[in-house]
Amino acid sequence: RNGDERAANIPRYVRVNRTCYTTHEAVKEFISRGYELSDPIKNRKAFAKDEHIPDLLLFPPDTPFVDDPLYQSGKLILQDKASCFPAFVLDPPANEHSVVIDATAAPGNKTSHLCALMENKGKLYALERDKKRFETLKMMLSKARCKNVEPINIDFLTISPQDPTYSDVTHILLDPSCSGSGIVNRLDHLLESGAVRRSLTTSSSDEQTLMHDPPSVIEDQPEGEQELRLNKLAAFQLLMIKHAMKFPSVQRIVYSTCSVHTTENEHVVRNALRSEECSAGRFKLAPPEEVLPSWKRRGIQEELDHPSDATSIVRCSPGEDATNGFFVSLFVRDSPPRFVAH
Ligand code: SAM
Image (cartoon, rainbow, N blue to C red; front, side, top):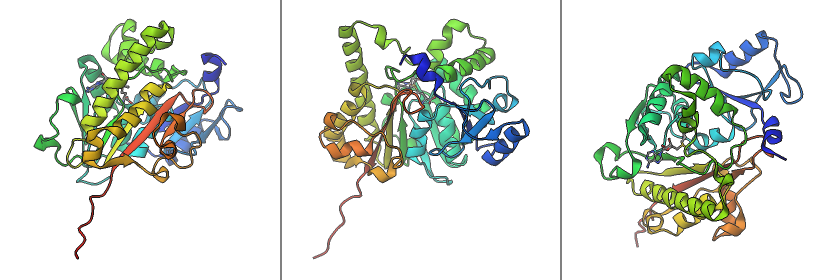
């Protein structure tokens, strides 16, 4: 099946922004507009609640939202289902003491999701190294009414894990630049970029630069160049994970991509697990019960050192799972060995 056919089976996903709206209110509103709760792929005037992600609603694939007042006011956020997995799996605590880093934040959909899960409490550092994308991030966060977020225009790799500012960080989300090879449904990006374009008055040629990083044209490149580029991306992605593992209080690190390539997914995780940083920090993959246990499609066993690691990984196949292609893994710190008195 080609990308368009696969995209036709992907519902229009809409996340209710819990910082200022509730799913109960949203359901009431759409019923009052003539929608009914049933299958949105079969019925053009139907919507449904997602079975895995709380506060996520499904609409027919071509439902327009960009001019909807609920979207305009930040009460609804257009976000593919798979891209809701990383924040949900990271599961940041919602209290005044929680300290979280979103290390690669722009345009900010996962940041605002983290903020909602934290109930706008504690502190969420949203880092973004690209200046232009950082401006988009700030605009998106203000639209989503995020109050606990401090956006910082910085390269995560230049931050010292010993910096006292970050000494209490317990959760890190890493959704770094990837090939974007899993994206078949560009509607989110086109709709969002329309809004971004209006707000920032940038030219339409900036759409790709703003929403995709880097533009996902990897499939169009000759094989040799493709491999070279994937290897470069993988080296950078591994560096990011190893850096995150150096933060003294970090307990949970989510690593995700919207790529379908094992080079950027299982191989990066495998190399992270083999690294010195991992053994020094006593990190391991979280047990499957902590990583969307009801999701069927898991990692590719043959590409990992221990086949059982695959059960700790979530994969989404573009189109087949009614989402874009996606990959999610969760590293957790093993509790330090207990002192046993003799
Ligand atoms: N998580 C974002 C979301 O859901 O909206 C999408 C993140 S996008 C895949 C990756 C982002 O990371 C890009 O905006 C890129 O500029 C940024 N980035 C890449 N390397 C970085 C680094 N070393 N430090 C901070 N940001 C970085």
